Image 1: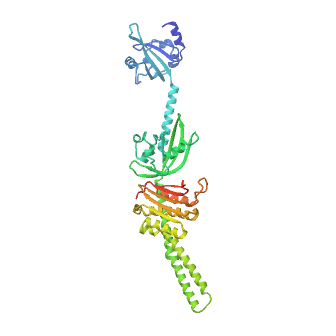
Image 2: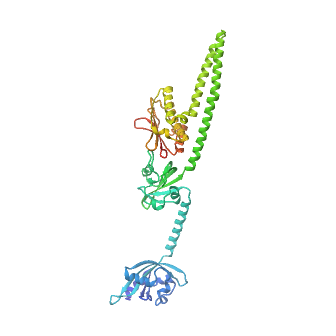
Image 3: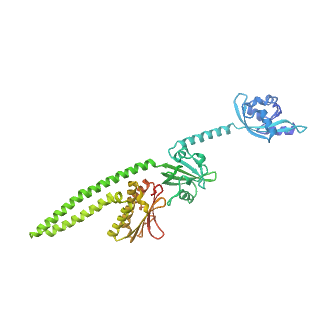
Length: 457
């Protein structure tokens, strides 16, 4: 080698060696001493096979063949230190043409990457550990990009929805959390986009999810946003509420059964007793009046009060039992409710009902829908000062409920709008797998809305 070129190579921190075409080392710079532990004079004249693990995927002969066929090779090798330990090496190799332009030697640069390889292995372990933890969690975890396309899910999601990873990768998350008339996944992503930058999260929200087989089920959804490598990543945690909803539905059914029992006892027990006492009071009043004994008018007044109490008890019993739903369908019960509103409050009450609503087979479902409507109507009568009230129950194809009034409404910014009545309506809707919303419309009307994506009539 030319003396100047050799002096330059001596100062390079990476290992540089030149071999003939059989793999005998013709030259090596001092950096190889640090890499392999041999002296420079020991290395020169040595076969490269002594320094290289021939069990690697590409031994020296294959390396030469690869360079002859293609461009210079860039790869990783296991080197062998003098003490027998393996050394991870990043190598670059190319051939040097001789006097007749045929290659007669090979130049190889070697860079020790043990620390880098250990870091890669540690990162790989950490990644595998994190994936194991995520896959073992009971909740589903979905990561999507800014377009709402799925980029990662854990095993729980695959089991929960019945899809394989290949069926989910790159697809819209809406296939799992479909559209409703109230809130959909775009609503949550939109709230994230409207934040002031940085990491952000949306509180838990209950909604409906859709399995591969087309069945829907209730879930609790929370969405967070982080910025990773300059991109916004949205991560949704999904909790399956199916078991909880079944339990809550059963609790409501037990409550309805108890209400029905109490209502029947009011009607058949207290109601009959009040009727009997009233009849006796009327009889005593007639006797007193016939005999000219003072006090007949007072007794007649008591009889009138007893009649009022009897009628009030029967109305309470009817409200608790809701026998119209059992015997004549949901539409009849809603129409009677509207009729009572007109008579008792003077509010104009209109009803728009789908003909299909009486086809709801589950009486517990029909009763809970009626209770939601009943609570919304009672709230409007008590607090809204409305002149007009409308009840709408349609099916196209999902069941949709809307109770609207033209009263004074409510302050949407007030902290105290979620009273017990609203909370109960919301809970009943959730138990049936529905979405509940109360809002002040552009026409200055208050609307209570419920949509039930998994209920069709």
